[in-house]
Length: 284
Image 1: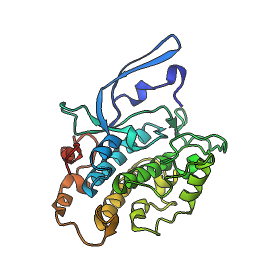
Image 2 (image 1 turned 45 degrees about the vertical axis):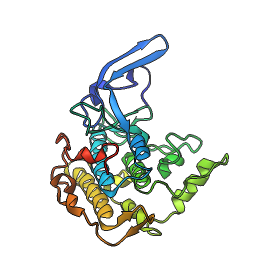
Image 3 (image 1 turned 60 degrees about the vertical axis):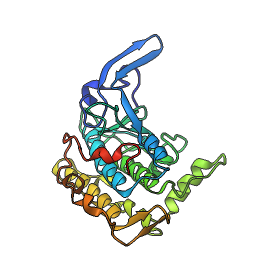
């Protein structure tokens, strides 16, 4: 976790794709200060202004870009630890970056890779310690386990499903043991019991999703695989918001899928993602 003089390692993270640039970091009295880029609305705001439901096209673009952002953060040796709609923001309206996606709030971020040895940090588990947001946290986070890359990807999957369907199966618990009930529901909900869970079809034993992948080219292929799986899931089952269910019928206006940026042919960081106009509030 970022604390004291290292509460935000600008030397490591400044310039990281998809993170806002930090212009100043310092301390005044008992407070630590960060001055960073001003950004626009969050995905939560976007969700609210679009009748609390986003289209397949929007979620597909968000998915590809969010995975790319997490990939770059992970390559710097960090995991975010609190992936959710509120922590993804669009650029400031009226600027050249208004159509770009950003990841903010690294207050719960931690290192998954030791800065000295380059190896994965030691595994630990503290069942009485929970860090994150209950609705979107991974099962491992509920169990107090050391955060890894797979946890960010799992939280992103929950985020995408929420944006697409407007709800998650474990919403609504209000008891004191809410965290336990949510964790139990996440553990017992099969990804096959409803087609909307197809987006979670990352096999738990596969690569980065399990936090056990090797470094280098193979790892890069893993992130590309997750982008492809997510896009394919959304494409295969067209979500019909009027019926609150998936349909096997192809979308009528599916020409957007042929766009090279959405298809992943131009999904490398730094391309600007000019296809992002569909993410502007009020545009469906």
